[in-house]
Image 1 (tube, rainbow, N blue to C red):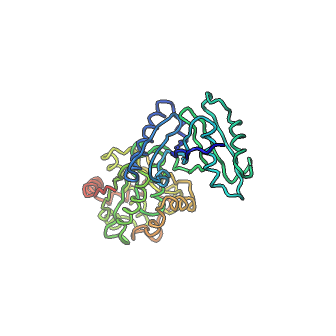
Image 2 (cartoon, rainbow, N blue to C red):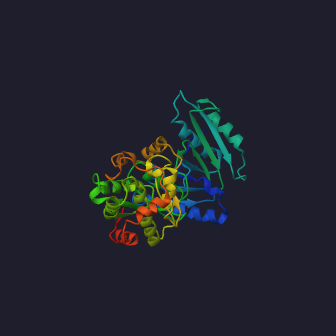
Image 3 (cartoon, rainbow, N blue to C red):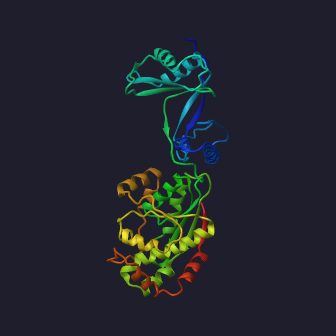
Length: 383
């Protein structure tokens, strides 16, 4: 067969669950996905062209942007593909380009799909003909290399490697949430999971100030910087001073109740901040029964102060599952150096009772004023 000029390469981008949406919602989500891709590629390449079709996006870039695309929520998979004309000669030329990368010891298979029925040859015909020109062993069941041929209205795309994306929904389509980020292993993963569900995530860290074990604030900023790679826009981190509130709790309330009382004060403060910035829910990295403050009884008592939803995406995870995600998204190494503040009691309560907790809280003077002052003194950092 006559050798043609090397075909042009583009990146085809496929999305997953967006197909489940109604047509108007899918169009809106696709628009958001395209805008997010452009935003996350900004500064990574000098020239991009992005075309949106009904079931995929087609990207042209002069730089290698695969590492960026892997972190764009909403992308199921993508592939570097040869874009060729709707004729066998050009398709064969692209197939032979890919065949050059297949070693003599590897097997292959041709996988063709024709969505444009105006193309005058079937998927089976093109599979048979293209398979005959590749001088390697065929294995249709479990090949080392698949060569995919998608024959579409927009053109024909030939590729071999499907690169997994971040999946989920495009960032920002699900509204804004406020994530309580302690800097441990769990809360960054919980934040990432809500980003994956299309939420715009604003971060809140309670600074224990004089009760701190180290320089947590700098480590928190490093963690948010890691998560920034998954966002098409800058992230906001609020640092709320919490030392005075903790001093009130430790000085005036039963020590066994410290963790539960602290969580209730954190939730009150977080809810007020959420209303101020327009967030519709809170997010935490809590996991059922992982530590004393996260028993079902204690979570019930802690939730009692809230009037807005609180999401706990890790509630049914075991620690190994959370660690695996943390390592994958790049937050693990920073998180392992951060622990709880120095106020944790030796024997924290595991079955808090709401009436006893409310009685203890009466020892804390002017809770609303403490919350208000903490928010007024908060620092907003844009990352």
